[in-house]
Length: 214
Image (cartoon, rainbow, N blue to C red):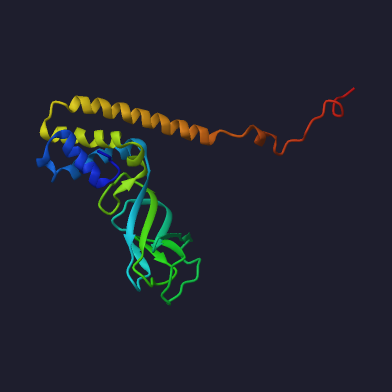
């Protein structure tokens, strides 16, 4: 069973726990598991699908846990277009319906540069808290670490059902979390590595033949 989105994750939890009667509680298990991931691992890149309305110039994102907006795309036919991000109030807006080309964040909404002439489907990418939902069904972390997401949720499922396998899942959760945390630290260190060539910037060059004293 693949685990690439919120719906598949909920199904996998019920399947691995062999408890089809817990479908109404699985969302809570995921939310509680995400609380641990938020404490230990920080922000995650998340993709949400938004639907526009003809004549509207905003998109509601109040249901999303947005901390840093990244990219916004809309689909027209089989083509996906990237909108240009701008700071609010720094671009010209129009009252004429058409294809939007620029966007900005305003409180809990995305403001576009013009009203939509079609009910476009948008793909919004942002950094935020771990918070899968029907509105934000997937994120970068679930794509790369479905095993950790599954373990984090099932630990709470086992707690709820008093399942004796909780120690097995807790052990896997701790192991997977440590692996991901170490990998994140390694990536941060590599990003902070300074190119040795930069150390020469601003320095006068010294030539052993011309600059040495007799």
